[in-house]
Length: 279
Image 1 (cartoon, rainbow, N blue to C red):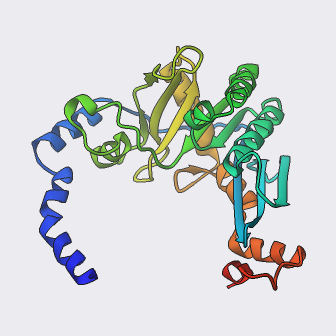
Image 2: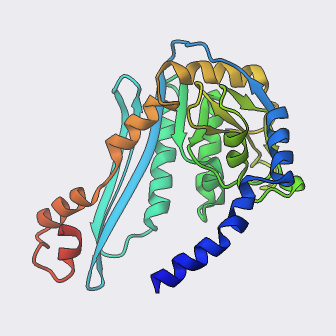
């Protein structure tokens, strides 16, 4: 079966590779270059808090052992807020929603403790959650000091070049267009309606490092604000990614090994299904 799949892939390779070449591709690349603001960030001392969350679970014959964590931590390693929840049974609300709620709680606790608060992920996910109160809570947290941003390594957004017939995400074309530090011109997305406007840029902190997507709440953001933001982020960055966010991820992630320890602590190691997480 797999041999047939591989042969079919070889036949379709050229068609698939057309995304990377051709007239349309070059048009989008030129548009991406024209939309790029070259800027070499200058290190600026500031206190940055990184926020991230994690969750994991395993099932035993209808039961579910689950755990959710979130943390806000400074680049220096000082923890501002730690939150967790765990249980045996059906998680309510869903784990993803619990994680989002914890991130907002950590954000609220951090805005007065740092010059910049960076959340891993997207502001869109907070607005699109089925818990509307979360969107309201994160908006209130942001408005306190206007020092909250959302940062992600990947993005599937295709809004900027769709009129040119783009087939991949916008970040794909910016990555292929140039390798110099800087940022794309600010794009304002009002599609979510009043009170849920998201402005964002794609940015590179150093030569040839991966792009990051930076999202801000609201309108009227200026290029000078983006430059100041990049100055702060580049001070403590690792391979073009804010160190505070890397630290937050490492501090809160729940691995399968961690879950195995919880299985043992709950006395479930001999239950049917426990082998899946223990192996």
